[in-house]
Length: 302
Image (tube, rainbow, N blue to C red; front, side, top):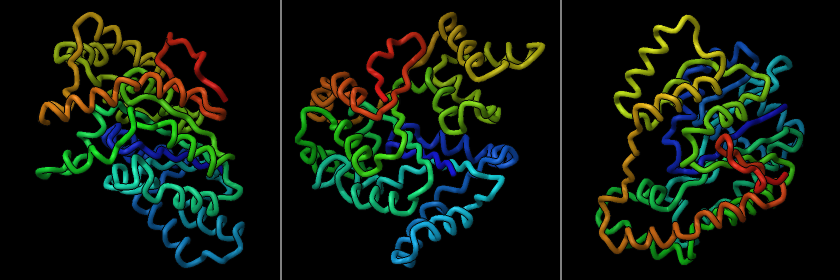
């Protein structure tokens, strides 16, 4: 059995990947890929850990997988559920960045799937975009939360180290949220497997992310008038890049603009080491990184 888990991070794709899986659930299941709803998946895991902790691990795993829809013909399952790493409020806590409850959750995941081949997908994001997206909408939230990050940058490499340490058999694939407009075909292929065709519902949303109004309009018109649809997601991405180059893009505004100046300054300080943190993370043994086409892949290591 292969289980692919998109574990976030929180505050990255805004649920777009989970939405794509949900929109295409019927098509995926027709191809033998089980796609349980995230809430159902997390609920069943919690239930089994609470009620069957002392059961035979292999029998428990088989019953759990079958209860989620796996069978002899359906041996591939995918779920997008950042909740596996905790709630949004757990990301920035008095214990640090992605510290509260992460290790017990990873240990529980390892215990529940002793034979299943796990693939974990994780997206990183710069502090300037991530932290404002996670802040509660209440006065004083930033003032209370920012002091909980004593590091010089967001310690993504520490989170990745925990994933590798507690789930050593799992594949780990990472990318930067800022690269999603160019690496989304690779991300979706990692979810379904290299030989699976990507269901079409929602692909255009990925391809057109960040395009300006005129570029978006002209691309939709071009696709509607084309004699045949794009042959694959890679071709769709290249078409979008061509329209972006000719007609322009629109930068996605970061939510940081509504914060006081001293907070923006602190986020800029955290982001000063973002590239170095990414390089350190990508150099860890057992980590595979997804890079924009044409980028030097020398930092990737497996």
